[in-house]
Length: 167
Image 1 (tube, rainbow, N blue to C red):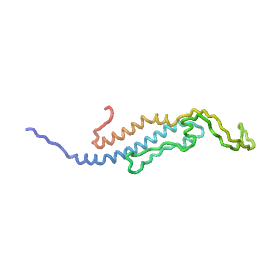
Image 2: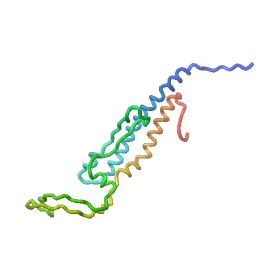
Image 3: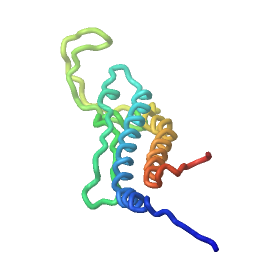
Image 4: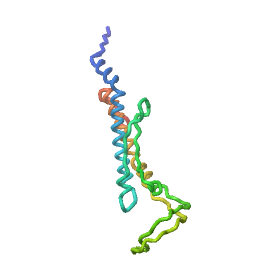
């Protein structure tokens, strides 16, 4: 005669792990998003051109939560609020209006202040991208960070018997 026995002693624990899985996964993905933002910010800051360092210092990452009720989870903001940031990233080709102003030096020398009238000038600046290459450089690591976070939480829910990718 054939006897079959099934041990269900860990079913309650497994059910509890799966019940808490969405909450734990969401918390883990929040941490992965913050880590990804920090990595992306670092990659971008390493590529910012300039001598004064203002653009580099002002560039920031903000892992803000989305409004309540949104299914999106979290949205991270990367950027800077400086008027010339887009000019540096994308360049500019066209006519620029220069307002009237007072000049106190000319050709590297101090002069008596004199009024410069408003004028237009043609600009042909190719730009020096920093954000796009930084995001591209960070993309593989971001994918790994999120994949590992999901795999770790699935593994915890299944009792450690899970992996993603090649074994």
